Image 1 (tube, rainbow, N blue to C red):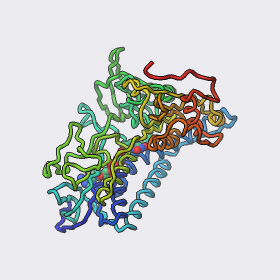
Image 2: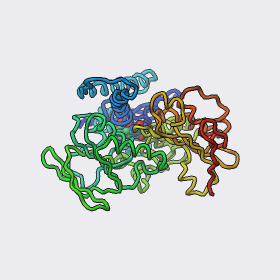
Image 3: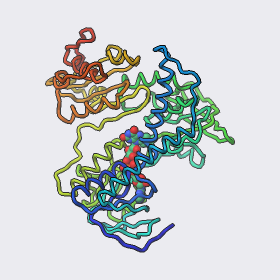
Image 4: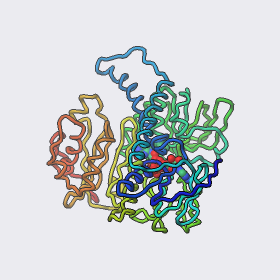
Length: 476
Ligand SMILES: Cc1cc2nc3c(=O)[nH]c(=O)nc-3n(C[C@H](O)[C@H](O)[C@H](O)COP(=O)(O)OP(=O)(O)OC[C@H]3O[C@@H](n4cnc5c(N)ncnc54)[C@H](O)[C@@H]3O)c2cc1C
């Protein structure tokens, strides 16, 4: 390990070059600060770019091409001899990652942001110690910690060579039989990827529902699609044993039906992620972690040491890149003395399955649990012209609004382009839109975006493209 002797000074130091850290560094530099960014990896971009959002969405795009070719049959188009060249796909994905990582490097350079490779920990309230770098320590006025998270492995699986999302995204091969442990968004997305590439996928989930926390009617089309694409979908099932025998894995599962043994070629563990907070030297400056290992922060992303901020996957809230980036901007603006706060109404969640699912704001189930008086307008894609033109009619858009006054409180979407459509909902929520703002806005025809307007019309009780419905208001 390289141990340097050089000491550097800077106004703002950012630890971590992921979507939280590099965005914070850029904003801080643009607001006039001298900024230094430290990351222990060779390439910038963090988990999101190197082994998360970007490679997974590239592989999903590839699988969409395969699926599109299959779907063409309905329209009278058949492709003969579809072939998959795995090394070429790997190369394409790597190319995308490298281009974007190089782009971040350039963006930082253009702003005069210095980048150091090394593993950082706090040595004191104004000093970072670096390992693996020629620079031994950095003295700073402000620090933004953005060290992200890593996959959790189940304790009973430790020491067994298995895939996490990191290995799966590198596509070392396409196993004939793949067991995916975990029906959250990472397990599901990668399950669809490998099913699309030709693996026989078995997905095992402990809970009775996939995508825990999402409304059941949004998850249903995904469950149906997964049941079609996967060899087997096992809910309310627990993995109780796993043994590697050469190239094979023998997995034992338990459900209400009893215990079963299954032989597979690879196991992908996608049961959650944990924050990279243990080795940051936080105890040296009096910052204590919460029960989940997260760093407590206020709305300005300040830790209990006010000039040390923490953002992204190491603080509370959904572990998502866009949330990390927004927090990065807020932290940098706070350091620059601006009256910024992380007070967003909605952090949209997107699952890039087939079909896609997205939601923002209050879910229908949350509204019902809290006994709120809301109106829910649902519009099925089967009634949408655009959905018919592309032969993708499974799914719906729903709007949850206050029964009194019609303030939009939440939106849920399942269907093609849900990942893009949810941005309009997020804007509506941030701007405090009421149903009429959605219904009186002219949405281009024929597009999927019309479904949000149509759902708002259903919530208002004046639908056009479905028979008149009775308003559904909670509590009944
Ligand atoms: C398979 C997968 C798919 C995903 N898909 C999506 C998606 O589609 N959309 C979405 O919004 N989110 C997605 N995510 C989540 C997203 O990747 C994370 O929420 C996001 O990367 C968090 O950003 P961050 O800046 O907090 O940390 P990270 O991106 O984790 O970056 C942290 C960086 O800090 C570095 N680091 C850690 N400790 C130190 C240290 N002590 N010293 C120096 N450097 C250090 C790490 O090497 C890393 O480069 C996905 C995640 C995975 C695993």
